[in-house]
Length: 292
Image (cartoon, rainbow, N blue to C red; front, side, top):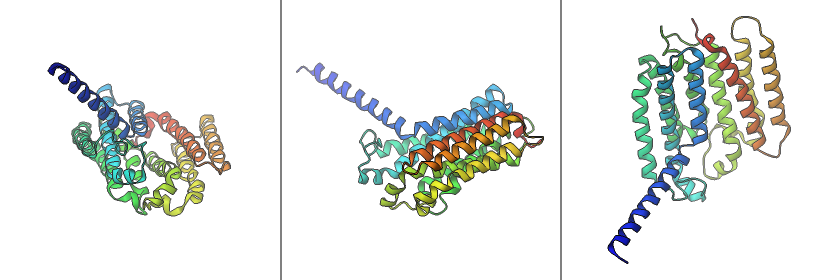
């Protein structure tokens, strides 16, 4: 084997290792929720009347914030994931190191700060409170009875982050903020339900884990349907046909989720469907979400 051959093999090995690390980072950021939240908030910015530059800043701030949260989550959970043999997790599978994930989380957080403040001091501060709440969940609150609180805060700050960046810096309507916070609580319950047995085995005793699967299954539709009701009846004026249809659809999805008791995935899918109805209702309000 010539020296050039060894060098080529070393370069190929480094390249494969780098690609593996990048792929591991993508998986470790929780790409599904990260993309969903970024798209949702950007769509809300468009619907509320933010200009193209403002919508771009919202998208960049939310994306970096969500990336930092996802990477922090996987870095914190790395020890438990390795001990439990969760090879579906990139750190546990050896695709990327804990140090690399922590570094990525720190860089994303550092970028999130100026990108958030670019929408204005008030808007940026509100968004960073939500990001800080999510980090507090990852670092501590996840295993406490207050595990629901970061979700409520993290989702609840999204409407004000969008509206405070508008001319005049208006606050959003109260019903939009509370509905978003309730969506966060519902998302927390639905997201945790399938993993409750494994979480308990690993010593994670957050709010849903303490309630147990049976109670969580019944509780999931409550905050989501309350959010639906707020988004239908909160705005001024009579409820139109679309509002009544949304209520009926959300109720039907909730009942379907409760009807199938054997699979924890069915309530999760039903919760996603109800949340989708709520998101559409929120987007449909457009500029009406401002309190002015």
